[in-house]
Length: 490
Ligand SMILES: [Zn+2]
Image (cartoon, rainbow, N blue to C red; front, side):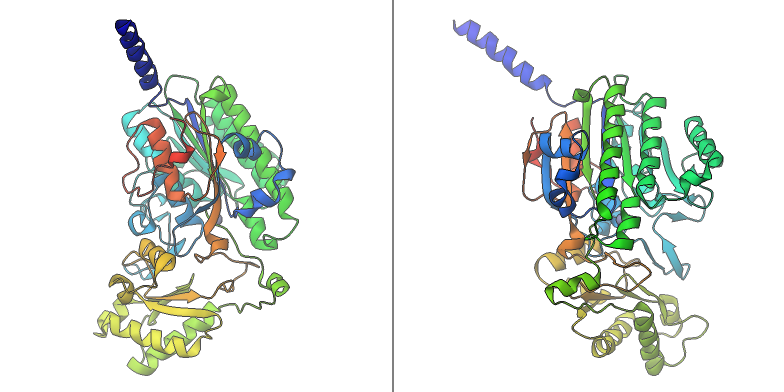
């Protein structure tokens, strides 16, 4: 009897062990650009049963997961999704910053040698780590926005594709492909686009989601993703949601068809993925967003708020004037390299040439801008010297500033706005803070190794390490996220 029990125990434990690591045939990661948390709760009745709602019902749903950037936007948001890294290590602090070497604005995925690449992205992604241990795994990342596709794909991806609006073509760069050539299955779609340019006209509407889904479905079918014994990874970001969101704001009913088209796109991609991988039981799926968005400032009148927009051009003029008044004319380049996305960038070369101490110049700007900018709009002004010394506000705000700060890429002086105050630009509403409306987004897991339930908490940096845990592979190098235990059925 004892012997039988022992045999059963050994058998049982070997069965339990066999279940880990999980070997999904295909991992699909979705990002809906600018989908703040309440879209899925407010409009869940508007969703179909085979797309996002299926993940909400049958998967692990974190309705209010959080980003940890100080300035939440597309570059840093996508960089976090599959790297699990904070910006202070990934290096993607903003969509663009003032580059102290070239003394020009530098786009986060700009690369003088290759056009577009992850050159400024210091770490690896989940796809990179998978590729290292399983070279036959196919890794594909795509989005209308180049920065979304590149920062999810990382360096080792087989195909990283984005959309050239001017040419109305899906493209890649020399970094990923010799002579920037796209594979055959993309050329087919491109010729179809060329033949019917009308189709490309409304990429900022639901049609953009459709186009993205078409490419993703083609990627699955033509590459037979998930069809052999190795795990493949497909990352897809829906950029059109963001384009429309900036134009109409998150309270507009015009966002409902955008959500529905993203949902339909997810459903179509999941259907193709399940078919290719021999059934949906072979899939592992995650879905999140890169940042949220506040309502338009006029919408805030409903609750008797009248947010004042911060005018970068005026801040820049004031900052330049303050420096000139104190130190005289700057020479061939202005004192201020750039003002934008809540930051003032001093030109370090101009300062060096004149022998001016950076901290002293920052302190001067901090004092003078404080007098000039209304405290109703700007709560606090911090210098990079203060941030480097750890002198930041307590709790979440300070933590997010430290997690975002990267010497030489972060601004010299940081403006901390009051809630619902944002920077004026061509968009009707703008995300770039770490307030809840910009920071909180949904996070969902579904498929192999994933439990079912609705859970509080979750950070976007947890996505990559949680998937890495399910796969039993090393998390991306600079990952600091936690494995979301409640999401696991292991
Ligand atoms: Zn975005």
